[in-house]
Image 1 (cartoon, rainbow, N blue to C red):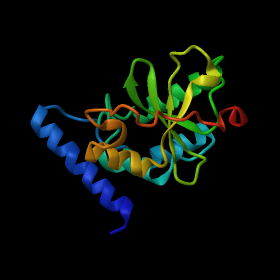
Image 2 (image 1 turned 180 degrees about the vertical axis):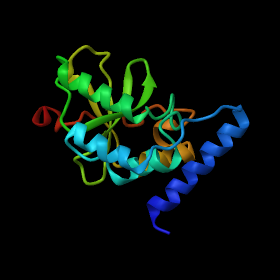
Image 3 (image 1 turned 90 degrees about the vertical axis):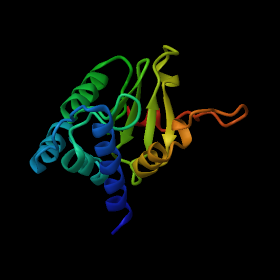
Length: 171
């Protein structure tokens, strides 16, 4: 079993436990062709791990903070961002609502599917993008383990997220 398969199994187990514990249901997984449709609409493919989350676990509603966005909602948020004055970067798909207008976004053009933080609250598009995690797999592992951004406590003096230097070249 490769690393992504193991990770998908762990996410599925966490989601099942959460569903049992809270007595709520989740959206059903997407049909396989839905991620192909997303690629045609977006002009780029969701990374394999992200596509597998949508087709094997569920169409959003699980994961960090307010959970993964349903795929259609992620596409709509991407299209709205690209049409806005914020200069949304090409290939950067919002995938999770973190609250307070913050989004976790997957850079679908990076080899590792790095996760970026969109934080518009300073009001300046040049200051709105930060590195959140080196990969989607690491971001999910941190969520499962309660590590990184998902820790209960943040220790003073720890490194703050660093700005994403590639932002301006991707608009």
